[in-house]
Image 1: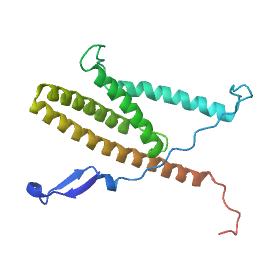
Image 2 (image 1 turned 180 degrees about the horizontal axis):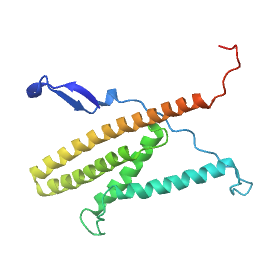
Image 3 (image 1 turned 90 degrees about the horizontal axis):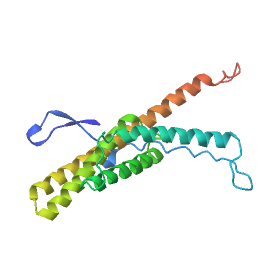
Image 4 (image 1 turned 30 degrees about the vertical axis):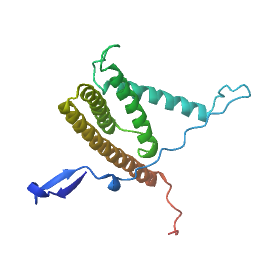
Length: 191
């Protein structure tokens, strides 16, 4: 988010805006995944890598349950006209959260960016639904509403990227600051 001077009718009035794509922070890539050791039969062997992978799996399952609730409590029954769009929203949201965690969030997407991505997924699904209805029925108002929802989804994705990157950088900065306190003091007489 940035503070910009308004233009046009709002000239001179400061406004908070989401950063444009070319100004988004780079964020932090995810750390490498733990590598479990396997025996000759391909079974996991107890060890640090196997334990780390199990912890990561448990954390992912818990986050998946939390994410599921961010799209709302109503589930479209099979056969409902919106059901395929709701399924698309869930799948797309899950893929986008995973991609953001891997490329920007340092392996994690916090609850704030996850909520924003969930809103973007709902907007995208509703946009596609209205677009299909508008195209089928020749309804210009539905097509216009679909376009506005798509634009809102885009803005939410930019905001989620920015927030996720800033959270990852803050976590990294905090971890670096804590490391400084954990290091032993240098021997006396060294700079």
